[in-house]
Image (tube, rainbow, N blue to C red; front, top):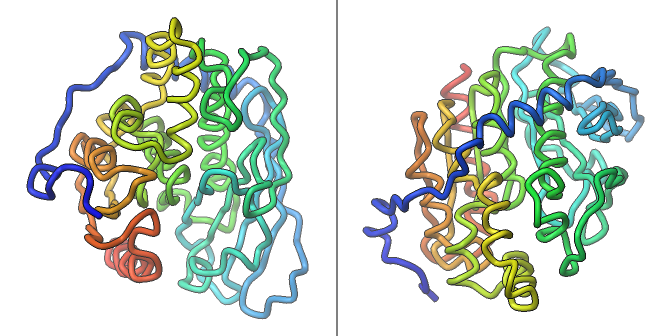
Length: 322
């Protein structure tokens, strides 16, 4: 059912942003610290029995110099350096197997899929651990409240730094057009795509599908679906830590990244989505600074546009990069 704002109101929904005064300095410092470790990206051929796609087992150094895994898929018959789609995975999933990710290489693009540290045991397997060198507070089961009492220790600081390094890793590959890189993902992956688009200018296209990690406070007030419910559950127990938690989350809000992003963008939203409520998606979309479009799926939930939207994304990139 439709539970959020009417579509006409969503299209103009531009809530005030909760942004800490040192937002830019925090992320500049985070990325500078991450880049002190050599990237050292490696691409090892992986024999998956595929005839039209070459697969490579990727390792690069992300946050804290810690190794992050991924897959690079290249069309076997391709231009010398095709454009690249860097894709981030939804909540709980990992990089899986190369055969899970054949759309973009089949469409003629290089395709890097980043493993998500610490995740990859809920639906697609992952191989990247998450060492917490800074320590963390007790948290509600899941990832949303790990280290939430300080911006420096919050879980997504490490993941977003990894996501930036994933773009840097693939741009260094000689078989990729470094000037034509898109970031994409669904749900958590869409939130990470927004973050990267707002942090580094090397991204020319962003395709966030039903993005998570946006407009946290409203999300926790209009839905009790996971994973946003992890934050509400934490606040219900830690009544004295509510504002501290949301202060930390303001450093990670997709709305604050969106206002800094100037790439081309194609969003999607499901109007019956109780996991990532439509108003949270439109908050990021309406604040997005670059040229943009959004596909609205009125009767869909967190599935968004599914393969119908994939077809629109393929046409969108073909029009930009023909």
